[in-house]
Length: 356
Image: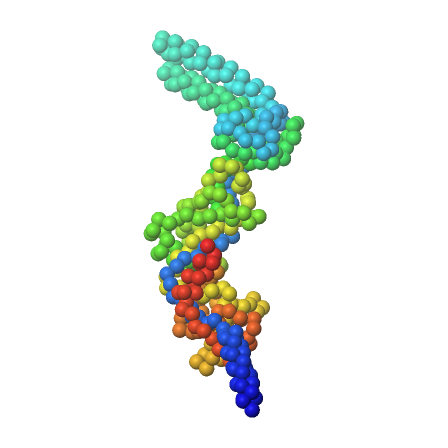
């Protein structure tokens, strides 16, 4: 009989221990959103432009006699790029020089006669005017000759050359484009609230540094600076354009590229939660909120920013809510759970230590 009682006590003890283990194992970790002053990095699609990019066009009409450069070649300011056949313009210059010389001789003769009162001073003035006109035409002819040589206005890289040797070039026809890629501009659009936050919280601190993510998702190793903001908002999109300048010593960036500008956006009194406390259904984000009766219910949340392991919440929950931190895939709406509460500051500190 004693042996039977002992066996019953042992069995009861084992059952109780197993029950406690099971209850301990089924406990979930719960925390709350944390209200903090922080910042996060936001991506903006950007268009990359050269600091100087111009079309080089012909000033004179004629046959393309020489091409001195190749597409993609780096050229120096003043370097000769193209020559249009100058013979016709050189002939016009010779004619203008001869006419100027004749006008000068005529003026000298008229002046001699005027000094002897053979002709009036008015005739001398007319002869002087003819000489001035001839000199002006000679200067114009010299310009036409010089314009047959097309030179680079600044250091840069030659773009596509659409014409070939011997082509008939019209006045104003596009010869090529020239890009100064020593530094690059990145243009990106910012919403009105973000613009106001930038002006209020970022610009005043002198924190104008931004990063650039290239099209292959690799970061440019050089930081840029936000230089200018356009004067007005686009009434259709509600955005305003920012311009950042990036150094380009490796000449990796080219005119017309695309990328993403990464700008640090400061947030005051922001509400943050761990990313692992969320789940997604049809492009919407949810968390499980635990009520006073330990019952879980899903709530849709709106996210305005992402940080390492954290989301910045715009709406859906408050800092007084208790949210399920782990096991979001194991529960469903209206489940009653046992949980252990962890302070949000402790949870976030643990996430940061784990990331390090």
